[in-house]
Image (cartoon, rainbow, N blue to C red; front, side, top):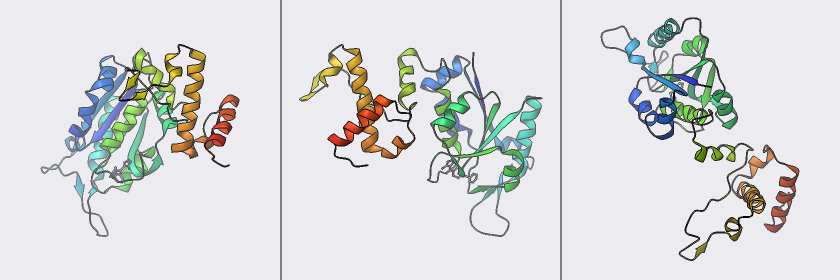
Amino acid sequence: MRTLNFEVLTLFPGLVEGPLNESILKRGREKGLLNVTVRNIRDYTEDKHKTADDSPYGGGAGMVLKPEPIFKAFEGLRAEYPGEELLTILLSPQGRLFHQKRAEELSEEKKRIVLLCGHYEAIDERVIDSLVDEELSIGDYVLTGGELAALVVIDAAARLLPGVLGDEESAYRDSFGAGLLDHPHYTRPAEYRGMRVPDVLLSGNHAEIEKWRSREALKATLLKRPELLETADLTDEDRKMLAELKNELEIGS
Ligand code: 4GX
């Protein structure tokens, strides 16, 4: 049995815990496939006010996460998991962009993965220099903290672990696998408010259905995210269909 082990360090554990206790992540945890421990950085402060942040040297607005509680938290982790190597990821807009490929790699990671969530504007650079292996960003926008980003990373990696998705759901796994968008989906009724489900999906002809799905996935990608086609994993058949689609839709290049 493959398992994934995360340690989340945050000042707001409640922000992270909710989604971990719902739906597929909850089930993955109950099955013992996904282990996530959420720790409050404030528990590692040692002054009477439990100070986790301070104003920046050099002046300016905003607060900076102090190094001491974070170093203490790591010492706690090393004591709890002696001899284990940790993989520490800081969620930050300065990080490399997180993508499906990294999610796949993380889903196979054997080390315990520490997700460090900064709140406030910044984190003391000495933490990054000494404790952080990798900085990841979930996108070019600014969040209030790293917690939602950490959840995105956990979610995207966990669903790729064998056994986390049920048989029904696991088909969805390949939709982004080839680097293409998904094809359209339909369920009953066959006609709704005058809108018909494409006949091929009702035909029972599985070869034709697969061909239609491939073509529609290519079409959706071409129309909505054409840049994905440059790196997609296309078969010769895909390339042929893509050329036909471009002709039909009168798209050049
Ligand atoms: N993808 N943020 C982190 C505070 C911070 C800033 C610098 C460490 C270094 C974000 C994102 C994101 C906002 C989380 C700033 N911590 N994280 N936070 N986009 O915007 O991951």
